[in-house]
Image (cartoon, rainbow, N blue to C red; front, top):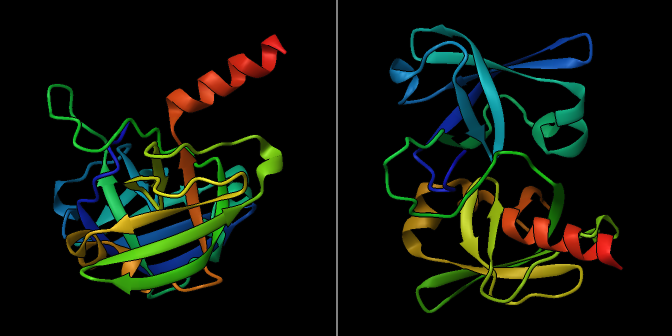
Amino acid sequence: MFTGIIETIGTVMNIESELDNLNITISSTITAELKIDQSIAHNGVCLTVVSIENDMYTVTAIKETLNKTTVGFLKVGDLVNLERAMKLGDRLDGHIVQGHVDQTAVCTKAYETSGSWVFSFKYDNSLNNITIEKGSITINGVSLTVVDSKKDGFSVAIIPYTYEHTNFNIIEIGMPVNIEFDVIGKYVARLHSIQI
């Protein structure tokens, strides 16, 4: 479980294919604190540390992950939002995030407005995922509040700190992002669909 509060940004140092999998090596300021078999969210995608060397560690993404997320689009030099799993007893500063991306979305607008940034995203609503006004959403691992909910899209407002300390500052119109919808909302939607 995660909170959607990004700890640091990592840099992709190497990518190697192995059958249908990708082994991704990341350099980060938290590498020295990691251990093998630890779960870390990378742009919201929960991946397991399989090796550590100096200030770099490697994770493996399987075909299922590559099919449902933007992990397969990563290139050497790309910046990724990183968050380690939450500790029991800590404050839940974001919201409950599983690190299981539901689908991707595409940025349709991005602009600055009086000290904040507004980003709009469009997604395929045939998968029955929903947002609600003032509900929670996770974009590339960042816990955010929906400010403009539509049937197949939504907007979020980003404070300067989040813009500067996550990879939101490199998101452009047309760029795909990972989306994890609110876990409580997913269960309510599922229960509703079963009763119909």
